[in-house]
Amino acid sequence: GRHIFRILSKVNHFKIVTINDINPDPRNILYTIKYDSLYGRFESEIDLDGNDMLLNGQRIKIYNKEDIGDVDWSECDYVIDASGVGKNFQQAHTLHEKYGVKRVFITNSNSHSDFELVIGVNDDKIDRKHKVVSCSICDTTALAPVLKLLDENYSITGGSITTVHPWLNYQNVLDGQSRYQSNPKQTYHNYALGRASSTNIIPKWTTALDATDRVLSGIKEKLMVFSYRTPHAIVGSADLTICLDKLPDLNTVANLLDISEEKQTHNIFKNDFEPLVSSDFISSVFSCHIDRRWLEYKNKTLKLVLWYDNEFGYSNRVIDQVSLYRNLDLEKK
Image (cartoon, rainbow, N blue to C red):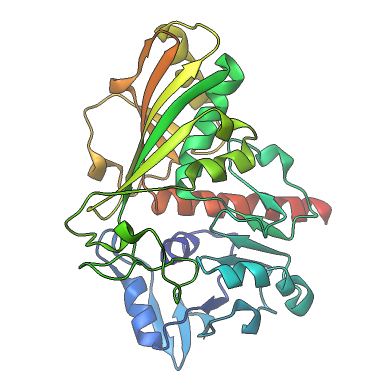
């Protein structure tokens, strides 16, 4: 949510008017926006006036409601719910009727949305009737466009994906209870995820392929997926081993990746050829980077390595999604 706020503060065609944060201290909310351990200081002028925030002199109302249905969204055309809390997803449909909100965008993959959108995969199917839009998840935003490209051109028959994901703020610094992100009051039964995130590589199940299957139907039946939660702060990676039906040579695959990057209309993926490491991708606006050092093809099996800033790249795509629907609404007028 804070990354989306930072990016929106620089976008001229949107105006931020309301924030809801369960943090009851507005000065602390301001502080967490102004100073970021990974991305540095907030560049715009920001202050408080009572319980309201002032962004370059523009007033933003701050609410502290656990349920998004209790917030007055009447001044908002679009609401982005970045809470990750399940009950908020369920209430998203009520905001249109109660407050006249045009659309709600959920930064998660879930069944409560009218449409799940990943730019570079199914953005040609957006429709005015969608009131609640799922923005999917960071892993799917990175993986799905590349998988679609390979499947359309060479027909994926099988394979496996291993994702490497940085720790998240619901994890423990020391061993303790495994907490459920979507329901913070509930214990998560993947007990290993309750172990110290600062000192362990933690194997875990991942919803990356379930979310990808929502936008790229049938892919879940072809691939296996596995994930590590690792003790680093930002930037994810994915190791793909993909079996293909059609038999391209390596140069053909390389040319497809080059041409597709040149033709794309959004910052979906970028080909990288230098010997980079995870920190080199911090603040990347792309959904993913393809590390061409590891591109390999043998016996109808393709090897690919992806990198992605799981916060900043994903947040940029969320705003791109809102922009697509805004353009659709403007066309209607």
